Image 1 (cartoon, rainbow, N blue to C red):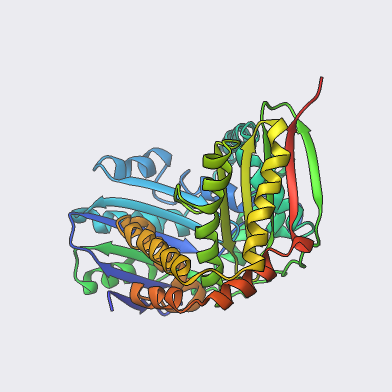
Image 2: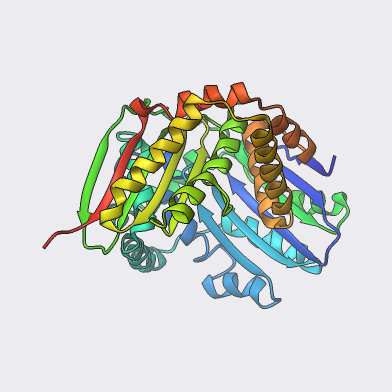
Length: 410
C-alpha cells in the first residue's frame, strides 16, 4: 500500500502518500458542490469558494494570499457539481504553514460584507467572460438540457441574478448544511513521516465540531432524445451529442471509460479524430467525454466546425457510434485500446497533484483507494461483449440528445 489513512474523532479523514521529492502537495476536498444548492441559489458553492480567500478570524485577504506565495508556494481552489477543493504545492519545509492555512480558510473564514459585495462583481465578470466562449458554454448548456429540473443542470458559476441575490446568511447556512466533517478529506503527498502529517492534522483540525448532516441529492431522470438548435453571434457551429451514463459506483464505468478513450479521448489517433479531422478535415476540435457522478453520469461528443460542414460531421459521429453498437471490437483492436488507455493513466501519475486529488475523491466516494495495479486489472478484465453491451446502452440513438450553436443569419 502506497498510502495511509487516519480518521479524526470528528470524522475528517487524513490521507498521506509518501513522495520522495523536495516538492509536496496538499489538498482539502469537501463532498459538496453546486448540486447541493437550494432552488434559486445557483452559483453559491462557487461563490463561497472565492470568499474563502477573503478573510478569516486571524488573517485578512493580503495575509492569506501572501502566506504561501511569499515562500514560493501556490494556493488555488475549484468547485464542481459535487466537490469543493482547495489545494497547494510547496517546498517540504512549509508543510505546517500549508496545513494551517488550508484549515484556516476552510473552517474560520468570516465572509466580510465588503468582500461579498466586491466578489459579486468579480464573479459576474467571470460569467460574462465564460459566455463569450461558445466551446465552453455549450457544455454547461448541454448539462442544463440533460438534467433539466435538477440542480445537476445548473451552471457551477450560477447566473448574474442569482449571484446578485446572495447574502451572508446564505453562505453560513450552506456551510452548516453541507460541510459534513465525515465527507471531508485532507490529503498530503511529500517526503515526511506519517506521524508528522497526522499530528499536524490533529493540531489544526481536531477541534473542528463534528457535522454529520445527510446529503439530500435527488437523482435526475433519464433523458429522452431531444435536439435543440440555438442561434448565436458566432462564426462557427458548435455541437454536443450525448446522454446519461453510468455512475462512478457502476463497474461498467471501466468499459465506458475505455470506449470514451477509443472514440475521442486524449490522443490524436482516436476514432473520431482520425475519421472527422484527419480523413475529412472538417473539424479542428472533436472529442468525447465521460463524467460519472454519484447517481448518474454524462457521455458526450463535442465538435466545432464551419456551419456548412456541421451536418456531415454529425452524420460521421453517429456512423462511428453505430459501428460500436453493431460490431464487437476485434481481439487486436481491444488489446491496443487497453494498452493505450493504461499507458495514458500511467503517464498521468507524473502529475502528483492530480493523483493526490483523485485519491482523495476516491476515499470520499468509496472509503478506499484502488492501487494502479487494481485499476489496470479492472480495465484488462473488460471484454468485447462488455463493450458491445455498453455501446448499445449508452449510444442508443433514442437517448442521445444534441445541442447546437449556429451562427446567426443576417
